[in-house]
Structures are given as C-alpha cells and as structure tokens.
Amino acid sequence: MKVNAKIWLIMAVVWCIIIAIVTRNPFFTGDSTEQLLTNPFFDSVILNIVLRKTGHVTAFGILAILFWLGLRGKKYRYFLAWLFATIYGAIDEYHQSFVPGRDGVFTDVLYNSAGALLAIVCIFIIIKKYGKSELKNTSEG
Image (cartoon, rainbow, N blue to C red):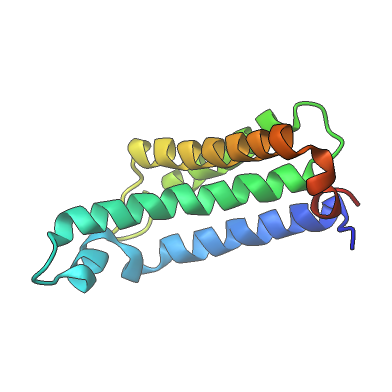
C-alpha cells in the first residue's frame, strides 16, 4: 500500500505535538525521572542521563524519518528532513525554558540534531545498500 507524502507530513506534525505535550509534563523533568530510576544496582544519575539523552536522539530521529517520508520527490530531501527536525528541536528547547521546572538547554538541541542526523544517515545507507525498491512501498505515494 502506498502512503501519500502529505500523510507523512501530517504524522510529523502530530509527532511534534506529542513531543510538545511530553516536554510540558513535569513527570519528564530530570529530577522526576532520576527519582524513578533510583535503585541499588546502578547509579541513578548516570542511568537518568543515558535514558534522557537516548530519548532525545530517538524522538528526533523518528521526527526526521517522518519528515523524510513526507518530502518524497523534493530536492535536498535528506538535508531538509534533518533541518526541520533540528529546527523543531531548537523550538522545543526554547519552549521548555518557559515551563516551570524545565530548562531549555543548548546541548539538548545538539542531541536532538544528532538523533535526526543519525536517522537520516541510516536511511541513506539502507537505500544505498538495498536500493530504492526496498523502501518503495513506504516512501512513495
């Protein structure tokens, strides 16, 4: 089944909304998640950092993939998908600076951007290795 590129862009916008909702939630602050991860086996501070930064990389990697799928047929598709995800990552961090208990941190923008770049590079490598026919059903519409 072919999925129209506009549907993927709508999904990217929905994903942006989900990210915004999650980042407004006080449960996802560093202190809250660190308390949740407290245990006798691992250093909760390190575990918290690893999980939170992995969350940034994953969330914005997914966003970049959704943008990439939505930009089918566009010139500079790979770059634009990374750029849009990175810009939204910066906007989200700026937004967090106004949320009580949250901070907008530039290093998190870098994690967001790195996650988007990692996803785009993986797509590029997969397409180069297996060819466009492997992704035809998901990226064309």
